[in-house]
Image (cartoon, rainbow, N blue to C red; front, side, top):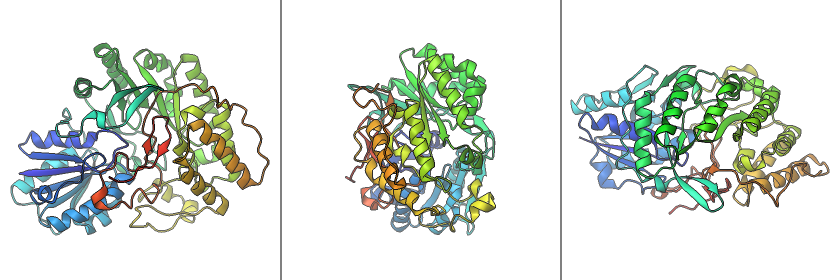
Length: 487
């Protein structure tokens, strides 16, 4: 029986979710076709027509928005196909997905659910007037992802290590979920403070097969690599032993970077090029509302520790929230400048607007409920407007300028001038501005971020033109987002 698995976008990476799902289904006898429409052409009508199950992998909001027109097409071309959505965002939009014809919707540990679905369809017993909606955080025995049929790693975002050198990059997961409850995080409504580790042997075998394909750098896609610090230590030690020339990057909370500071030298010594951390804000009021578990001073201390150890921190931000003022935005830019982060913050990070999907923990706050509108079923989030129209206008203008930025440092300078103009304040020089002598910072050539409202032009792409190299933007390798037309 034929199963078609489709990914629309996974942050410029070869989609782990498709590879894992394919492994589970193929081991039970399924004929599986994997299509990543961020690189591949959209599947032909004959492929859709010949599929009993069509599964859409939706690990983030942008991927879900892009999947909707494809799901509508599948329903038209093959109304008898069993449409399934699986991934982190599947159950946050279940009502709309059911209207599109989805009969199975799976979040969390989705592999068991996909296998059960395949067996039901094989028996001819999958049709039901009531769609199956399941959030599973049950422990399951993972399998080595089967990456056959996916576009080669060289088709995806790469590691830029210098002005003239790029490396093929792979991606894997050592754990899923997160034991923290940050209010704005899309992981929380699904995992509710729980996380699941992937067997060390599975993680390493997945890395091995990507190294064989040419990967010289690995991104660990865990929401927080140090949710299980002992598990993480063992993996990076063995990774370095097996592949001493392969580098990697991880994502770790500020809170964990302080708690396990003794392990920072281990990261450095085993090939970690940089650590991404969701700083989100340097305003303690906003950090408290988001329940981030750290303060502005904690971020400063982490930066001090990283300088001492010789590691690179790549902070991410949600620069625009309902609590952001023009003055606090200027303060964020000043922080980036004074702490010499200009080359480590991609321009898109300074233009991101808070995304409020269905079931966000932010909606538990009565004060926040008064700030947002009802769920926009087309946009798949709760819209909000700032009480100061100047803030929304500033964000829109900055977002429009991202694609024209020549470097992160120059975008910072541009944002600094624009923010001062918005505040009607005289522009003072940036204290750390050294545009002529910047230090090159290694980075992945993919600056998009999963917790942001996507620009509307990104998700309004005609279904026949979904084969985008990067749905949100294309990086020129400097961390600057460049728009890409459909092809």
